[in-house]
Length: 404
Image (cartoon, rainbow, N blue to C red; front, side, top):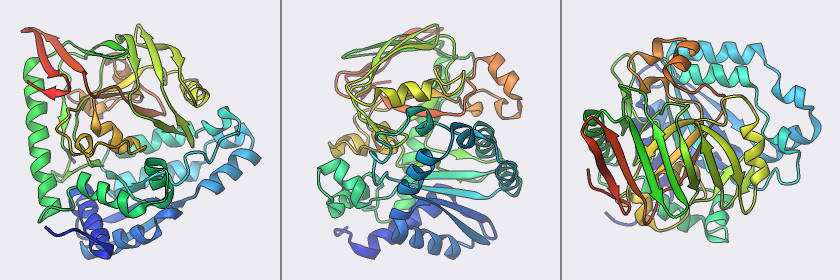
């Protein structure tokens, strides 16, 4: 179709978020979490949600300078203390089955440069735990990258928002006749890959590439997810758009080896480049980077589970993000350009019946419990992934190409 521009593009973006992302149902409540930099896009998403029949839409705003003010002036105790009203709100949202939309795209990844790393990484652990439980419950959610001048500057060295919009539109399939239908088709392909991996009954996977040789054990009977999820009412939704991955949660105690992160990471308002990790008995034991290493170390010290993996993921060069040939400086996009892993919280739905289990029961199975979940890309040109199971060693990805 013809090149998209202006409001047509924003309206298509909003339609994909509402229809393919959270799949808003008549009368449903909607939470929209967004930065002040995304005002125009946020307005379009709110309009699309109401047009789809939303009963109510509540925007929840964030802002980098305000966050810096909190980090500079608040104590560490204040930044980590639990607010009962917030926990109760998340629980109520889950009970009501609301839809949650998050517009991402950091307008200033350097906003917390020069602040105390411990305070910059601080979180309210009980609130985060309640939020994650809500996301794993009746609440449907999606996270989407929203272009803005600050994000464009990270990608191109100048605030060329138009050029960023072109890349985002391609990655999000906004150029399709019906973008939401195009995503449903892509989701079906990814689900087929997940089913093929399930059939192998893998006990471990191994990533090999430049600077990376990592073997990760898998939980017996674990499930691979690709494309999207289905809630308990049978309604399909896509937690991330774009998404090009199939993923599962590993056995937290079994990762061994080294990994080299191949894409920049924006973590707690700080840019991390050239990150390298060493893992032993599942735990991250060594951390180094060309820049931003203190932000990583601070997060890894934030709770006992932060140093263990909660996700392993497979992505090949056929993804639209990979074909774009640019570094988006946004984890949501860059993680879908190549294979990645995440330290921190596991996905309880990665094991049969996991959502119904307590945190202690999940931990006993090998799932990781943490208040953080940070994805880092280790894939790209030269990456090879093999899986080991009852059928022996199976090649899954060869030189960044899906071969299973």
